[in-house]
Image 1 (tube, rainbow, N blue to C red):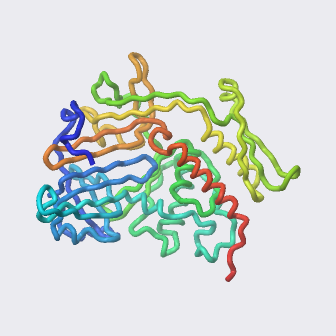
Image 2 (tube, rainbow, N blue to C red):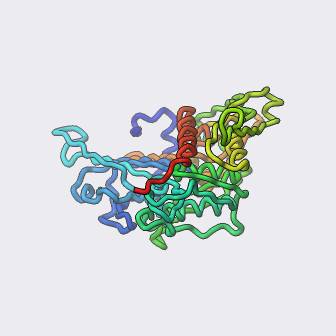
Image 3 (cartoon, helix red, strand yellow):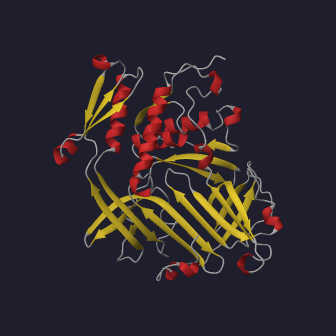
Length: 407
């Protein structure tokens, strides 16, 4: 974790006074001890459609250490509102006979946001059955994007999941009226739930999803939202003195025509293809093959081709790092997932989503909030990770032909 003394020159002017308190709760959201106000550092990273992460350090007092137990959660309260909350992932205490770790030592606690508990689940082919009782190939559902996302969470981790799979205190927030997103069809078997949620959100028109602790209901809410377009009012740029890094890059497609192989062998194997005509007219033809073993209908083969085309499409990647300023700050003027504008030239602006919000706070220096705006590829997901996710999907398709155990 960066200390105030290690911050580059010029950052100090972005530091502001901080009002942060930490609460530790049990898994049912009950506070288990006194409020922690004697923390030394707090570092939280919120990510759009991804699990957030956090860390805090504090003196290793026994009354604090006794709260940091397996299954408990950290709640970061900033200016009276919950900035982030989620389960403790690990902790350590450092002590020495002199220096900054002397005396009671320094306690370091790592935690994630509550979306991690949803991400810990797999998509069961039949969510009503145990793993031993699975008798269907895959969980298949068609509906409006928000409906699909809510149902995925509800039956695999929410109130309508099997008892042993329910995330404590997790409920579905009130739906939007009308439901947001385009119609999608999803078919999944034992894939990580978070991966399927991201895939559906993208296919349904770029929806957002998140968890949020509601102190009034004492519940964790799963919400689906349509990102707000604030590109006309929220701007980042070097001339505005709220941008510290900018990278704009254009990359040719890695796939413009996708051939999908379905059921059958050799010359009898079913083949179908999809083409991105716009990409081919600009960049030329780039072919790739996607195997889909099993007896999937043609619509699902086309869906697999469309996902491969999306993964291999031309990219115009925007990556930025921006500061909060008194007249444009999180969460008063923008939130995670909002579409904002970035000045990339003297008379040129582009817009994209806020993919990441980073809060750093020091007990002696104040707090610093920064945001990253950019394409999905810019926020995370390096090439090797996307490749591994593709391998996971293909293995899931292969497993559909396996016969469930009857032993």
